[in-house]
Length: 203
Image 1 (cartoon, rainbow, N blue to C red):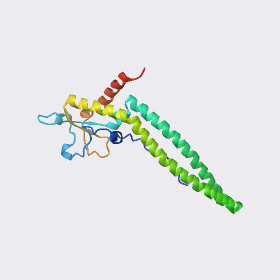
Image 2 (tube, helix red, strand yellow):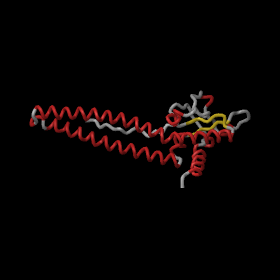
Image 3 (spheres, rainbow, N blue to C red):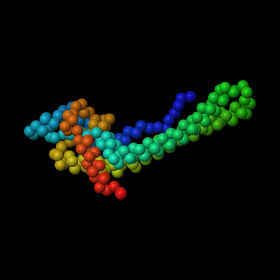
Image 4 (spheres, rainbow, N blue to C red):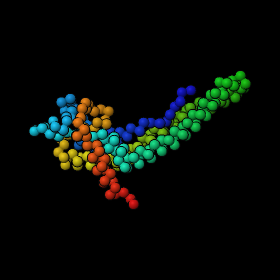
């Protein structure tokens, strides 16, 4: 029997986090090659617009609060996976008995075991669907505040440094082919997010 899993990837995509938030001014765009970020020397050329990139996923998940949120999410996912694995083992054991003991089982016993397998398989499907939804909702709940803070700080930093565009290189839809490390603002945004959340952290 093929092993199933309730586990979903911990993508922590900014797109999901901002789903219910106002669209950020620095949201990723499907840029044409000519608009792709350039090295700092080119971006700073006379008459050129300053452009930066950020790994929004890393900015959120590597901040202090982001790491705590990720740990909490993984803990909940692990608990659900354990429950799912237990039920799946029960199904596998029943199917093994049906396969190896068919001749020794009465028709009534075989029918009863087959019914149990069907019921447990249905229960696993429902458990998987519920887990996917609950984990998705929890991810949104945990990350929405972090995403809002990160986005606000990014916008302030972009305005402060005169960046006309900030591209999210963690987005699967980005078309960025090259960027200079000098214009990657991820580490600085993480530092600023940590500094702000530390001020409001409960003692």
